Length: 115
Image (cartoon, rainbow, N blue to C red; front, side, top):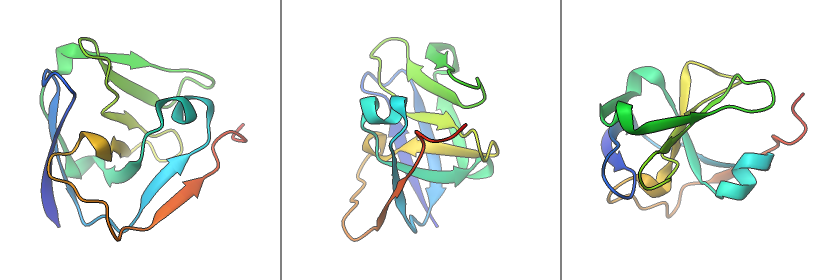
């Protein structure tokens, strides 16, 4: 596994993940469609928030289980705590420095039908 650095746009929120990127995912739920994120799922042990816990704004909707985090300064969505697998973090790969998604398969997940 390789370590990747990530951040929001303004740099108030910074984190690291360890991943080998076996796949990336999209989701068609109401929030993911609007934020148009491409995500990788990492176990919470492979995620480290380095800076900006106080800058994060949390948003929950529907069942109020998944925890979507945004930078309160620049508004960027860097990650969320997953609803179905709460010990995993969904990372917005567009927030990762020096990340090349070429060759990594993308799986479309169905989120809009989740009850």
